[in-house]
Image 1 (cartoon, helix red, strand yellow):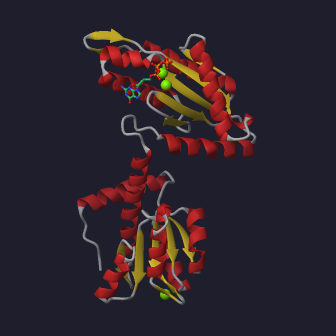
Image 2 (cartoon, rainbow, N blue to C red):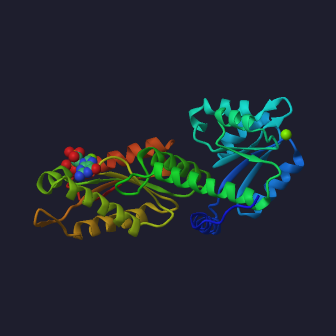
Image 3 (cartoon, rainbow, N blue to C red):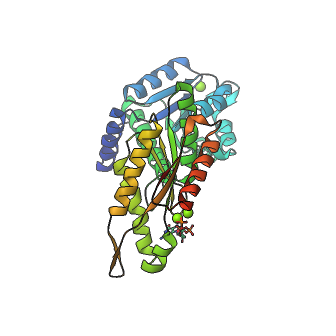
Amino acid sequence: CEPVDIPVLADYMERLITERDEGRSGRVMIVDDDPELLEHYGLVLENGGMEVRRVNNPAQILSVLSEFRPDIMLMDVQMGQFSGLNLARMLRFDPEWLGLPIIYLSSEEDREFQVEALSQGGDDFLTKPVSDRFLLRAVAVRCYRARQRDKLASRDSLTGLLKHSLAKSEIHKEHARCTRLGQTSVVAMLDLDHFKQVNDRYGHRTGDLVIKGLANLLRHRLRKSDMIGRYGGEEFVVALPDCSVEDAQRVLQSVCDHMSGIVFSGGGREFSVTLSVGMAPLGDFRTSDDALEAADQALYRRKQSGRNGVTV
Ligand code: GH3
Ligand code: MG
Ligand code: MG
Ligand code: MG
């Protein structure tokens, strides 16, 4: 059966191809006890630009899931002593896999059985044999949506920056990466100065615009490979991979300088806002939390010694 071409699908595919070119295509895990089918489906998806992990032995599902972290799972229904339905139901008990799209791939055409399969925890049912083109599209669109959903869920809605928990886990990863490679990376905490006054004088909505302004400034002045997160209300965190302390200090000082030069307006008046920064070399600490704590203490010292600038 061939898919209907609708503009939305074409748009999805176009964006998917762009993502693929940037090396960010979907991750698909296929579970099937038939090695030939497993290989065939795997090749179809790989040729479509997806990263595929083939699982022949259903007993390995959990370990492969945690290690590979797929965007979507394709699962056979009958696999020797294992039932895909039971496996899907089991996964739904784990909050971590509650939202993972599971698509059954089966030759079972009985509608009642399919309904039962869906109620056990699968999201959809594709009947074998399935055409290569259909399989690729069915997987690609779901992967794309799963990725968009994850992206939105991890972003702060006001600024579009990473939320607290994801920012922390990115810093954790960067800590592991830079210590392994022996590189210098820097983590910094940023906090707007006297921000309560901004809200009090010009209103909360103007305050929001200032927060957005700093987010945009950071996006423009830092490298694409740097990580920027909104840590809390008017508090931000950044990680600068492979960057010396001196360079980090220079770039963060330039952020402070630019921020203080921006003219905001609220309630018919114009004003400017400054920020304070505390930073620490990530790899000098045993854990990323220790480095964050050191950056926070540096920020505290900067607040004590006059704000509007960077302290190491
Ligand atoms: P300091 O220079 O010592 O950091 O002073 P401060 O006034 O910035 O610090 P304080 O922590 O006392 O106040 C932070 C203020 O930030 C209070 C809170 O209302 C405001 N705030 C937090 N989140 C938001 C937000 O999303 N929007 C707006 N407009 N204000 C926010
Ligand atoms: Mg089978
Ligand atoms: Mg503040
Ligand atoms: Mg604060």
